[in-house]
Length: 464
Image (cartoon, rainbow, N blue to C red):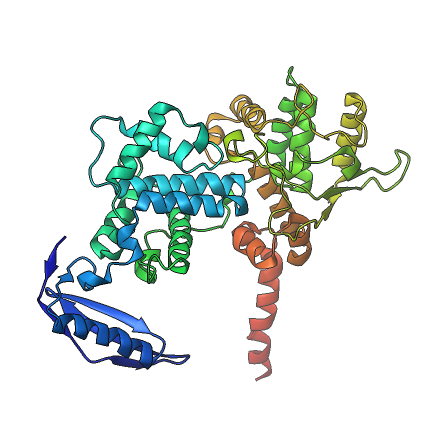
């Protein structure tokens, strides 16, 4: 432990802000400045007195933490690996499958960065796999093989204490590590932002358990620039009617499961559900009009989502996890009108498959949930076969999710009020506009006419 007796303690700094007043204790340890803000003068004075008392007793201060040796906190007594495992176990029941998986990934990168030495007797990929798939998976950890347990015991022995987070230089090293992919390239902005969000929650847990005093992660604009992201849809990913018709037509003619997949993709194109919402639909969730009815609009009811997260991350051992609709209260539903073209497609699909009201609307070959891999492969194959080379290599319809983007954009461009589109899409209005505002088009002439009428000075000039 690096210690020093070179310590100076200054007067308490009082800052009166617009909302509250803070009292900051300032001191210097071996030339390094430290600051600790408090909400009351009493708390600040008590902490400053502790520092002065330690100096008076001739006690050494730890250079990396700025605190007296006697101030060894819970953070110094607990290894990061032990804390991370405890955090996973505490949060496991509250997290969905995808959140569990993302948490494990973030903690794996962090734990590797907090090792005293890098493993020489194990492959780096094996260490990461042991952490991600076993240590930070509460359900699978008891079933870890002897080889995995050997790796995890080594990690536990070589893990730095949680107090390493009190060293700003170490924090910078950790953030640099989680921002970097295994190939040495910088991770995607969304990945970096997600990892920081997860670590902020972890730090909050450490503070509530009195293991850390403050959140050591940097705050403010200086850190947000590197992880700047946008929710806005790339306009290039949208499909025009010709492209959509050609792609869906190719899927329909596909020898293996073509009509079934065609109905699925048509539902996304005309009604705009998320893929995990569409695969969860039952036949009874579709209200079809009588075949002879003049109005052929149908209604689709969405109330469940079954995202594909991997069986090792669910409590049931199933690949899919049943959840409520995204961003909605528990048990809430969402009704969406079905275009007459979709009505015909679904009527034909239900009849051809001989489906009953309680059956899944879109099934796999063996009657279960339509697998995401099957959906993605069919869509990718359709793009490859149908689109010209320049369009295939572009973002146009590159993801199945782009069918939803195309649908919602079409509604907005048709003049449907954003509040109504947001209701059908399962978004809030602010989120909807943030995502699709750049894709709204076709109304420029109307806007120009309005501006021209308001700003035309020629008639007034003639009157003058």
